[in-house]
Amino acid sequence: MKKFINLLIVATLVTGVASCKKDGPDTPGGGGGDTGSVTLTELTDATINGTAIASESTAAGLITSSASGKGIPGVAVTDGYTYVKTDANGVYQMVRNPKSRNIYYTTPAGYKICLDEQKHLPCFYTPGILESSKKYRADFTLVPLTAPETEFTLLMIGDPQCYIASEAARYKSETIKDIKATADKYKNCYAVTLGDITFDSTNMWETMAKTMANVQSSDGRYIPFFQCIGNHDHNSLEKDTGNPDTNDYNAVLQYVKTFGPTDYSFDRGDAHIIVMDDIPVTTLDSSSKPNGKTWNYNAGFSDAQYKWFQEDIANVENISEKVGFICLHIPFRAGANSGGASVNKGRHYANFLNQMKKFKEFHIMIGHTHYQQNYIHDTQITAGGLKIYEHVHGAACGAWWASDCNVTGGPNGYTIYTVKGANVKNWIMKGSNHDESYQLRVWDGDQTYSGTM
Image 1 (tube, rainbow, N blue to C red):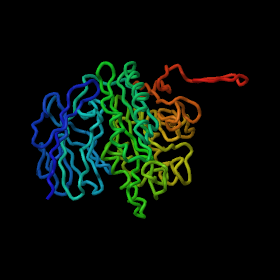
Image 2: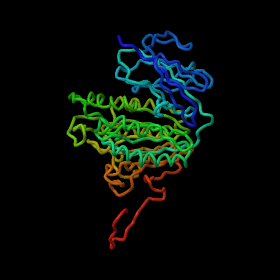
Image 3: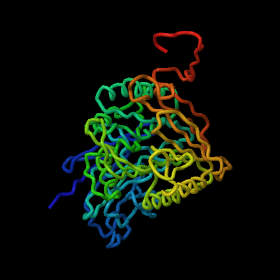
Image 4: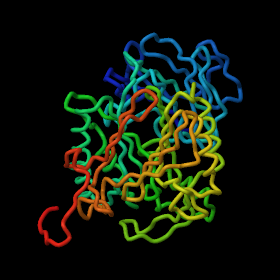
C-alpha cells in the first residue's frame, strides 16, 4: 500500500507574494500567524471545520487566512475539470475527476501569490501527481495583502524555447537579467511565459525551471513566474497511443510535474488572469532536436476545457467591471479551419470569444510566432464597449537564439503591461539589453553598414 505524503508549505511575508517552505511528513512546520501553507493528506474526515463532508466526495479541504486563522468563504477551487467554492466555514468539497492531477485554487485579489521557498515559483496547487483511486484532503492557508493592489505590472514573455544549456544561459543572462532591472522601475511585477519554454528537449525541464527561480529585484522582492505550455513543451517521448485525447493527456504529464497545472487562473486588483493550454496534440512526428521527436497538433480547446473556462468565468464577481486576460501559446486572430497556426473554429473559437466579452476590457496574450502583432477583434465588443485586443508577442529567443533579433528584425525581449484598476493603461515592447526607447531602427538603403546593428 502506498503512503500518502503529508506536505506542509509554510509562507513568510513578502510584498505581493508569500514564499512557501516544503517540509516532509516528519518535519515540524508552521501554519498559523503570518504563514501560509498547503497540507495534503488522505481524506478520512466526516466533518471539516463544522462542515459535513459528503460520503461521495473524493476531495475536500479547508482554506484559512493566516491573519485570522478563520476559514475564507467564496474561494474558487478546482481539480482542473470543474470548480467549487468554499462555504461559510472556508470548506470546499468535490467529486474529483479521475484524470485530475492537482487540486488548486484561484488566488483572490486580496491575498498574496504563494511562492515555493526553494525556487520562489508559484505554488497554488497540491504538489506531485494525485492518484485517481485516492481520496485527498488538501488544506490551504492564504496570506492577506496589507493593502489592495490597485496597480500592478504584467511581464509577458514569448517563447524562451531553449534546447541546449548555452541557450538557457543566454535566457538567464539576457532576458531574466533585464526583467530584474525592469522590476526595479515598476510596481508589483508578475511574469508569465507564453509557451515553448523548451524546444522538444525533455532534458531541459529542470534547467529551464532554474532559470526562472529565485528572480529578485534589487529590493529583495521575488518576481513570480507563471508558466503557459507551448507546442514544444509537450513531451514527445510519450508513445503514440493512436488516440489523440490520450496522446494529449500523456504529453503534458512532465510539464505538470515541473510547473504545475496547465489551466488555471489568479486575480490581482481588478484583473482576472487565466492561463490555458490551447494545443491539442495528435500524432508524433520527427524532430531535429535532442529527442528526435515532436508532436503534430491542432489549435483550440476540448469540450472539457470549455466547460472549465465557463465555470472559471462564472466565478468572477462583478465581471463587467473587471479587466480580463487569457494567456495562451497559439493565436486566436481570425481563426482557422484546421492545423496549428490559429485556434480552430471547430474547437470553441467563438465560444471563448463570447465569454471574454463579459468583461469590461479583455486582452488575449499570445506567443508562438516570434514576431510582434496587434490584432483587434473588430466585432467582439466587451461589456465596457471596447474591442477584444489580441497581443501576439515576439520571442525572448528571437530567431531561436541564432542572433539577438526576432524574425522581423525586432529585438529579443518581452512586453511590459501596466494595469491600473480595470484598465491596461500602457504597454511597451522591451528589448533585452536595450533601453525602453529602443523600438525602431532605420538605415539609408544607399549606404553600406558593417558591425553591430
